Amino acid sequence: MLILTIIVLVILMFFGYAFLPSNINKQRFFRRTKKNTNVIYLTFDDGPSEYTEELLKLLKQYKVRASFFCVANFAKEHKSIIEMMKQEGHLIALHSLKHKNAMLQGIRETKRDLETSLEIMRELGILVHYYRPPWGDSNWYLLQTLKQKQIQCVLWDVMVQDWEAHTTPEIIANKLLARVKPR
Ligand SMILES: [Zn+2]
Image 1 (spheres, rainbow, N blue to C red):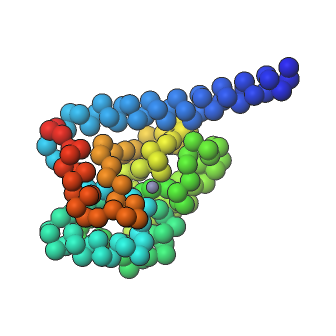
Image 2 (image 1 turned 90 degrees about the vertical axis):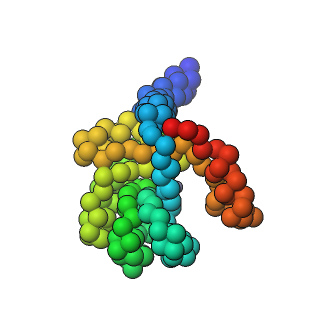
């Protein structure tokens, strides 16, 4: 009986702390983005990595500015790439400290993750205005803290699996064109 009670309590805690806030946040985001005009914002997550420089060259060639949601620990390791992003006028935003799922982080871990990443970004000369949680998953504490710090939580409407090993530029472009819609 005791074990069952504990299991039920843990499930309820997870539901109230992570599952519910995370999903409400997603619903709100998708409702909000419907009001947008016909603009496509290209956003790239999980870098900087060994591919980012090549991507920056392409963006420069086509005169496109994008948004980079950086993992703070990777940003620290690729300072020159961060400088390139700045010089070329891209938006640099945050994608957590080391890409952990916030639904599986308690308050203390979430706090440390966010504070350390903001500190790293500050040292790189970046004031963070936008945050994209890994996998779009958040928790109650993270969402409250972002709100307090006036950092906007940004998710996405369209995903084109450009990270897949066997994809090609044509597949990516076709997916993108098929999935974007007016407004
Ligand atoms: Zn990610």
